[in-house]
Length: 429
Ligand SMILES: Cc1ncc(COP(=O)(O)O)c(C=O)c1O
Image (tube, rainbow, N blue to C red; front, side, top):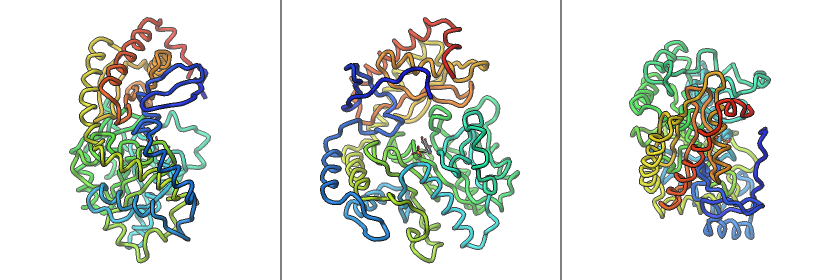
């Protein structure tokens, strides 16, 4: 809930949203890093409309469909090396639940039912369903009343991996110590965000640590799961966040950019070794939901994926991201509240000088001052160390839009600076 009334959206085109009073807002967060093609893409609208006129729903146990078949083909063409199977879900949270179930079922079937510990990092965000919520490393944000939901049988004490004091992400040393603590023979899976989402304000994982975890997973027998719900599908300037480290996980979950915000669809990409451990096709193990992989969502996502591939939007994100990071560095030199410019491609974050006594107040104040200046930003961070905002416009943005983004952000930062310290502190929690 927010104390500041939200604008009422009336329409949207490309990188801009318009409210009912006709004000425009430049979307510097692509919704929540999902509207990667911008709004109102004609090819996606045409694909959805055509599919709606043919068949919107079939259950995957009764029929396959042309869009789902083509989407699966296209996904396998861009998936990390060794991907053998695509499992569909409706949200990133569900895709992570699916990865959890596959990991536990894999160890059961390969003679290691004692591998039940699943590890994840803090800060992290993996979703709101019970298993995904349990993996989420945000103690101050995850409501204490949810505790009975959390699957502590799987996520044992000590399986949360913390960064060194003052650091944003855990490195090899912290991971090694945590694996020692948990006992490597008990670990079923390790979940990582190759480029952190809102919980760390786009802090990338160190590539060397990621490669070390890959090697450690092979040595010790646990599965490496990359949660690329936010950073997948070209957002970071490569197809996958893992590509920056040149490694492929055992399981990769993604969502958001797959459908570009036009519908709900998420995936768990399964590597050959894991898929091969099941004596019947993985899809027939109980994994999905009623709407998983329905033809309408598949048709929309197929159109999004075709556009991502045809227009080489991951490479465009790399190119535009370098220019945007340079513009943000200019703002950082001018505004002392910005402590860092970080991220990859068009998944950028501004570290902010947070105040320990009012964690996240500065981030919230900047988001609302940006809105006053017609700019949409996502808040980031779980405490004053990670306090940040995400800057992540659509992959289809123009150079002119990035100039305008920097201009509006500059004005928002001026407004933030002009407000008194007490006014910042008074921003509602
Ligand atoms: C890294 C990551 N994992 C999982 C999720 C959960 O996805 P959803 O909101 O679609 O359930 C999110 C959502 O922001 C995310 O950023």
